[in-house]
Image 1 (cartoon, rainbow, N blue to C red):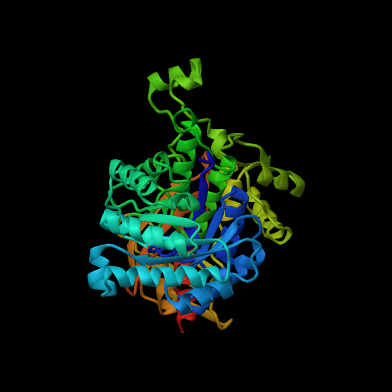
Image 2 (cartoon, rainbow, N blue to C red):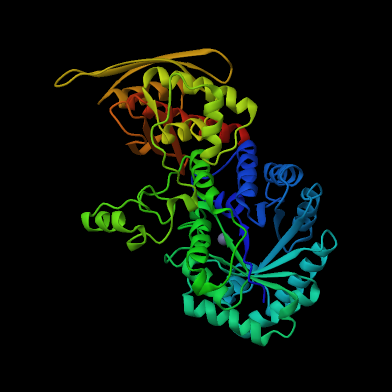
Length: 506
Ligand SMILES: [Zn+2]
């Protein structure tokens, strides 16, 4: 058996489906390029038949992103599969991923199909997909709640029909590591033609077991893991790419396998995704959280100073965490900035650089030392790109009985100016209300937090805003040395995400 684990990334498909993680076409392309640089083997770019936008996203990623295999998802329906095939036309390497649910619950209540009908549909789906490409993946949705003997029958039939990868998803995040191990083992021993396909797993994190279950599948012989960056995905999310990859790398002595991931790109890719979706990872998140490598206890710090390995199982540099603290300032030139950005693991195009360099100069006027965290914020932070723009803002605040007020001038999607003023419980509240009035959008604010992302009294603050609009959760992010400005920019990010979604829907 091969000792290479295929990393199948579904950030742009399963991840993008999760609340608050919707991405525009440009954002998907940017993310796909970062995933290619990270070294994932397969990018699941989307569900081509879901909508014209999804189709377009798959087609442009297939056209423009080279290196990984580009995959499109399809139900075992002729139209889905043809759309997937069509969307993948421009790909250098392509894969169609067909699926059908196999568990009794899904067969009876969702599909209303017998076991024989499910097998028939699976076989027809795989055969049709094979007319578009040689690389065909078949998934038994809700596999972990499927009768083991029936699962083996479906798998055998799918391989017979030409599937080259067989995926065993734990769709509802229900299984345990030992059960997953047994399930893969059983397929390895019971299915006569199993050697003609690669076994894969796709675990959800409802019980916090997605990574453990994926690793159990690997130990039982699976050679592909489906995962997402930051573990984003439906409900509690998917198996986190960075966690499964670093477990395999750090415990090479235990697993005896490897991946092709350039792990120094993990942190930059993770941060890019956070910036694009506006949803930031918790500080204590394994591998990529801000605290993942921080040692607060004195005993630990003493140990670390004597010998890092006393408390450190991974080097921060191995995931792309570079700590060179304060380096750039007002007099640094464009060249130094480009070098720094490259060192941090980012890739900036010339046109990005014009914008980043201008923002850098503006920041350097307000802040003496520009840290790595500041640079990173400049590169990935400006995720919001209209249609609403804040042209001017004036806020007043005070203590005691004084009333906070805000006046804003916004440039709207039609290019004209919208002026509004409002009072509120504080300057941020007043500004949000004024923006709501100006845009005519009423949102339900669920949360606002501001964190400092660099050090010192002139540190930059990162604000995160969480709102609900038309029943949907939307996240926004903003950065500034001024916390009111950071909060307002996060709120504008939210307003723009909603506007873009409304424009897309209409
Ligand atoms: Zn899933």
